[in-house]
Length: 229
Image (cartoon, rainbow, N blue to C red; front, side, top):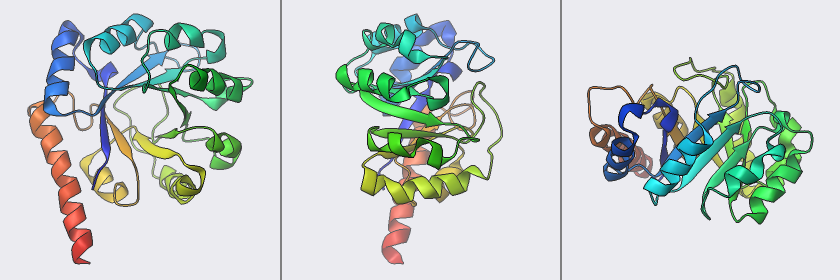
């Protein structure tokens, strides 16, 4: 069973960011998740444009850039110029007057367009945008901080999106409070990838390699279980 694992770099050790990127890459991470917060759309400041640009220069792995900023259309070009073809940019539809205009700029730059859906945002309010995005990042916690608790009611939203994804040609990703039991439950349902933060990957006694290998084993076990059923 294949699913993507992406490292939430706001949780990394910034005392040696170069070493963190190398270790994660060597351990088999699929991509790097970059949370950029402006202190306005969410009440926190996180990664910067320079952090994003450095990680883009330090790895050939794809970047998933999650813009938690107000009116991203005003400044989207400064982010797009620092990224590579194949990188993903997520915006929050609520943060923009005309989100489809911003998404088109992402597409025109040769990048992968995505939207992030907050726990309180319904699928119905973003339905038309599902026709133009390639990825949907489902927030299972309120955006802005690491280490929050999973909100169970988001599960029904995920089920709804999974029913639509084949017809509308987008992938579904999980972001927030991602634990092993959540991967075991939702990966077989069709989630395409999981953002890993402090719940499962960072700040643990085990190495990144050991942790990622254990998660990959989940996929093998689930696939074997499905074949036997």
